[in-house]
Length: 277
Image 1 (cartoon, one colour):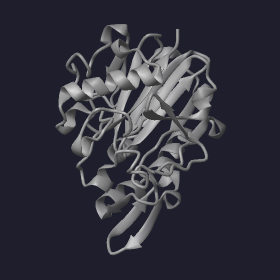
Image 2 (image 1 turned 45 degrees about the vertical axis):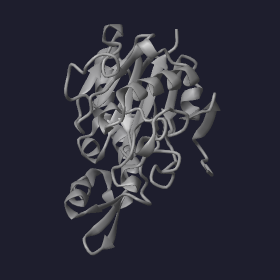
Image 3 (image 1 turned 135 degrees about the horizontal axis):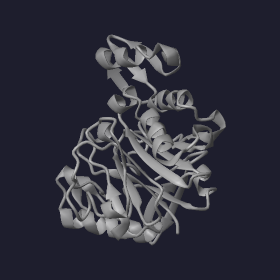
């Protein structure tokens, strides 16, 4: 396996591989990690660090994968709170009272694609396998957020909704927020048909010529990362505070689960964030 990136770090601890992002590593109170396929106990199409309970894997193995991953990346297993994603734009504030949801406790809300908190001892967990991870940290208010931006969530401006929720709940100033647009299917590989393209082309205020490309015969390429970057700028974030991972999940499907590359036969990746005590 060859991994190349100019702005995303691949680390290994006890045989477990995960990714970290320099702009978040520079914030002392934040712990974060993005999982890879490496270091778990799942088998077959889920090999090996599958962290998604909804794919048909043995749930005991998924739980064991969470325990292994948490130990390697420095998170408390009992502090996890998982989103219950359905490609929507609902943002939920979570506290210690919510720890275990989606891991050791059932989901209590159907639609949650973004999580925010300002409490230490709460680890946010969101799920991916080509969709775009959005990671946020406010160094002034000591608050964090994770958002899952598939194409529907991107069109629905989940990034902007997350920033607005941080402002509402924590008094965050968007100009202070540090954001990372994480590993996702890249503009090189995200081919769509006309109905999806038209949704992105309708975002005229963002100048869609910069994040769409016409291939012909009813096929187009869309750059989800750049679309989300432009939306975060519209939400008030500063360009200097937004980092975009150059890692494409489909191009790196040996390291990262990719729905497109596997034809849907795959496990799931996660992003994790927590506030250190």
